[in-house]
Length: 451
Length: 44
Picture 1 (cartoon, rainbow over the protein chains, first blue to last red):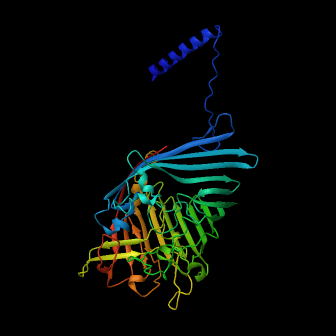
Picture 2 (cartoon, chains in turn orange, blue; picture 1 turned 60 degrees about the vertical axis):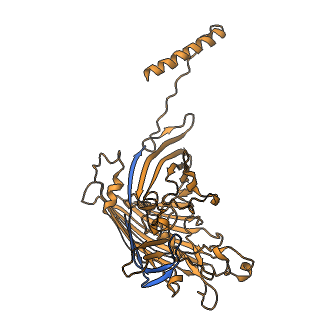
Picture 3 (cartoon, each protein chain N blue to C red; picture 1 turned 45 degrees about the horizontal axis):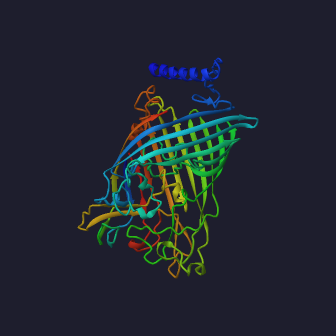
């Protein structure tokens, strides 16, 4: 390094000598070096952007995941699609390499600190994730992000992007309904079912009021379009349901944001939070074609009455338990009706389930499935008489313990891998049956996960 | 991570699942699956 620097200096000197000779031997004035000025107001890692009053911190992580026996990266279990079928198309392992880059800025203004935060993920996955099925790798889909994972390719995912000022949060961040740990009470799986998870951020506006002694209240408006809407099924569509209970999504356009909020007490002993959400369930039309696409008869067929669903959740975190330094316990329980995302949730979309196994009674195979919907409706004499909201509920519990020493932990964040060994999530009773015929009913499905 | 699908149907039915599965008699049954994730990570 020293040698390189002297070489550069040497060539600079040579150029300076040349230009100096052209400029009639005037002395070259060296510009003063401006060192980075450390900003110590907001914790470690901040420095002033030169020439401004804004402090900036660059951060992130480098992460390599390999998931075995799953439908996708970061430990999505084999609970649907080709992996759930266990067929010849499934990939036995799925890999992902990611660089997450975060940019955090703070500016002290007359009216308080303004903060911006954003995280982009530069990543490259196994092509097709859990499947090599030509249907999943179709190039005719146009929006198939899987196809970006080709040799020399990769793509960018956007996580948090928000501005905070005077108690307000604007942008893409965790919902006010979420617990601080989202779907990660102590695990490294992005698919731990049971409870709200917007760890990658949902577009929202929030206001948080601090009442002192660690008590705070937050209200928020979430954009429901991609996160909080699972699906509505119109059971009147001919052959509406697949063999595993799924159907096309018959949601109408978004009319109202989800209204969410929490009350939280955050002290040295831990944290307790109550949160609630209201979610609009509005279907498109009574008469729809296959795939829930509109037909010429749709508009005159009318639509079921719009309903509101909702969810409530309680979360408890107890720190400093006697098993060791840094150990804690996290428990949360959620109940939802017509707002299934708040229970059946991953860090991405809400999955439906279709798993196949062996049969002990001579059938070809066995099957278990569960469709994830916010509501179902059908018209006619045997119809549902409007949208029927789907009820879901769960309890979740985890105990986390850092098996590595606390001095090592900040440097080697492998801890979640060990923490999840002790994590338990128990019980779920989602999805009310909506029809008597097994082949056309929206399935009862419970999906507790344990590690 | 162990995942268990607790479903409430009983008996059997003739179903036509997504290909490549055949139209056949399937038994309704709870299902289990185990997945495993290995991670190397460095924060900066």
